[in-house]
Amino acid sequence: MELILHFISEEYSKTVNQFVSASGIISGIYFFDSSKSLVDNNNVLTFNSLHESISLHHLLEKTEDEFLLTAIDLSEISLEKETLNKFKDAALKNSAGLIYSDHFSEKSGERKIMPKIDHQFGSVRDNFDFGKLVLIRRDILEKSLTYFNDLKFSAFYNLWLTAVETSNIFHITEALYTVKENEINEKYEKHFTYVDPEFEAEQKELENVFSAYLERINAKLPPKSKAVSFGNEFITEASIIIPVKNRVKTIKEAINSALSQKTNFDYNIIVVDNHSDDGTTQAINSLAEKDSRIIHIIPENKDHGIGGCWKIAVNLNDCGKFAVQLDSDDLYKDENTLQKIINKFYKDSCGMVIGSYLLTDFTLKEIPPGLISHNEWTEENGKNNALRVNGFGAPRAFYTPLLRKAEIPDVSYGEDYAVCLQLSREYKTGRIYEPLYLCRRWEGNTDSSLSIEKENKNNFFKDSLRTHEIQTRIKLLQNYAG
Image (cartoon, rainbow, N blue to C red; front, side):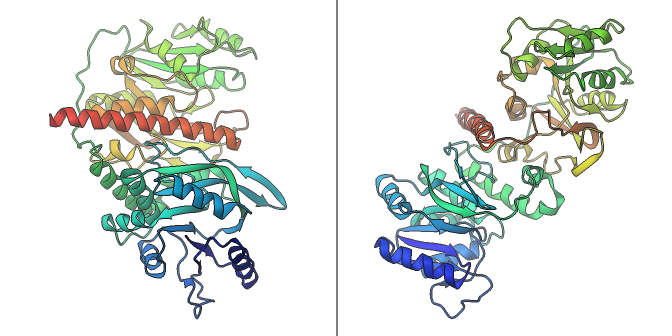
């Protein structure tokens, strides 16, 4: 097993060398250093990270062992006493092509554990968190370069997809090293990288790598989608669906935003009040008494998530032909949002329509990154690439008969993503790239800062949705072929 770390300083490299020598496990140690400050040293690899193919080529040229324990990027890594033993033991006992572990994070003198989640078959988002140190089997690295050998941004992504395809990925549920952290970008920056124009070239390359992977495992759907013929069996054209629990600060604004819509058709507003106890129920009643378009529902079950509230709403006889999203702390951008969405259904015969939104603070002041329009979506490959990215966008609207047939998870995170994956599998998705919606970020909403445990739980759940969806698509394509 050979070890590859980032060159931090002469002192750091000396400490690592002493540690490795004492272990008796490592046959060779290398430092990658793009600054070339160690250019005369035979143990130097002149690159920054594993994300470029040229780095992987260089790694293969310099090393010779079956297993390579390598840093992924420029992070400063301190090895723990059992790091090398545990990684090598896992490599010998498992047939995994890639092995990763939990780790410690050290920042401003504070050290805390950073647990990782288990990798699943559907863990295909390119920002899956392996930590900063991974063990790679040499043949997996070599195989990945037969698929793509000149990547600028996504060589490591291609590498671990290769491991999924030809081997497996193993998680050591123990913190085996420490990462000294610098200032970390704000969460919205990490979350929205895939829609930021600054990263367009990188995202396109990642999409190409992922599409090739889907094709190899027979999970890539063809571009053609079903157009929808709309029925007339509904008492109203559209319903704005607002699930809510304890949003007394915002619910009136949300409902008034819905009431203000100017349309050439009738619509209603279905508010599913999930047993609020902060005055939200009374606020809804005060508006419903004045406008018959507001249908106030309180479920019998007290344990529903947002998905369960949606399921109740769309299965009401009062639900219109189209079910349109409005979260209880958000607003439509203006009085024309609903009309634009319904127009898009008829124009393109869509199963669902997804608009664009502006991120704002509680006072509706725009905050970075501003407009989220999902320009990465294409008619040809959007439904495939959607498995790689973290969401579809908002506001979301659905042809009600299709939504009634869909499996809506009774949860409060990822339920929308699950439905959109299902519908995009078969039916045409309409996109509106102008802002229709104001999405507020504030300390009280579900998108506010999450603990690492909650974030891990959310990511694991979404990966499980992807697992199910990819397996479903593979079976669907097998049936087509048969």
